[in-house]
Length: 426
Image 1 (tube, rainbow, N blue to C red):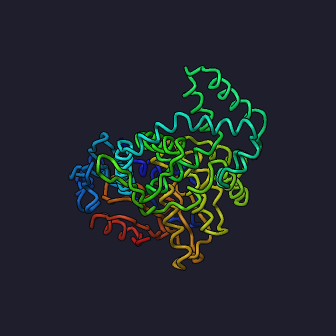
Image 2 (image 1 turned 90 degrees about the horizontal axis):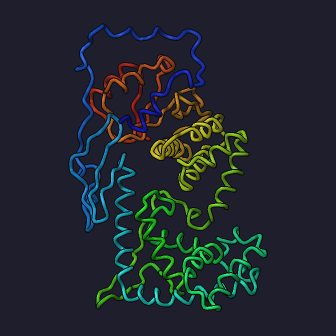
């Protein structure tokens, strides 16, 4: 199966909007018929311990030591108490390991005495909350923390009626189905989303992860404590049979505070305003905003990286690429590539003048006309696919710079250098 990087790097040249030099160098000679495949490298097999350090094993997980690569990305297999996880790339493996630790903590919390007390209290507590909303929905909305206020700007009869239905059924003794209806209603009108965001922040994980097991645990623990009226706080001990369990603070890497402080609707609004400022066509903007392969976190991260690049030309074309990506793995690679470019801009290492799409991969041209191509890979081997990318007709003679985030074989470095490439670091 081809990697996400292959899909991005080796897209057909016909899709690229490239202006060729007036006198392009001659294309490379065609390979002799029957040329030996030995001219290329077999993708390397790496060590999990070397790539991940002490994170390769933990209380509830173990990463298999042999990590094959596909010429670009490392493919990890993580065995855990909560199932097997396949990860493409070191960044994704690190995120999954952090998520597995979060699951372990949440499972421990769910076995505690305090959790049992919260479950008991949640049976009646949410009904009281919904009754209050039914009596005065506008006042109740104003009492919700500001970060969820966007959902309550248009409070009317629909909210009051939904809550009143639950209240009436409860007071009328209709127990069957009340819990399910209550959950759906209360979660939608009393700020439960904010509770989940706070729980994710305390754990240091992405609240919009595609890790279904983690989402289930966050949902369960957040709802029980929230509806039971008990706060779940970082460092708060949870007594369980004489033992002490606590959610401990974790460093959130790469996630801005707004991911936890703002609702999805508010983040979407910010993205829309940013795309309008970049001149993204409305049709492309809508497709970007509705692309199921993009999580809320990824969507916001891509926008923030493009904003960090300043007013460079070509930002709208990158949004077009993101709108067409078909998988989350592709999106993650694109996001990481943009982050590499954005990282250099504020540091003064480069003053990008424009972005240029090479196939489907964003490159950046500086004020001197030098093209830099970000490569957030784990380990680059000189495979046929890499060689074909390095020999692209629209790159010959341009002496591009490869911003290599990971490692590369000596063969790869020497071949690129011979072709006029410069291999640099982000």
